[in-house]
Length: 99
Image (cartoon, rainbow, N blue to C red):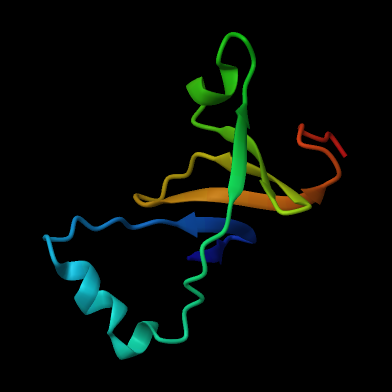
């Protein structure tokens, strides 16, 4: 899920630990029937400096390939408890673009 805070996109991520057998109940839940559950193959590559400058600042830079499409994502730390600022844009290669 994402939303905008002060004009910046903010990714909100919540993870749940479910008990054994919960998957079957979720799969049959009416609220999830319109969800596209098709499996897809993605390749995600993270980039940083040799010294780990991005990670040290709470940032990440990745390029994700899904089919013929490459998407670059920059995530920056945030003061939100469960959120980070996130920007995505298409790129031509499987390496980061500065443009």
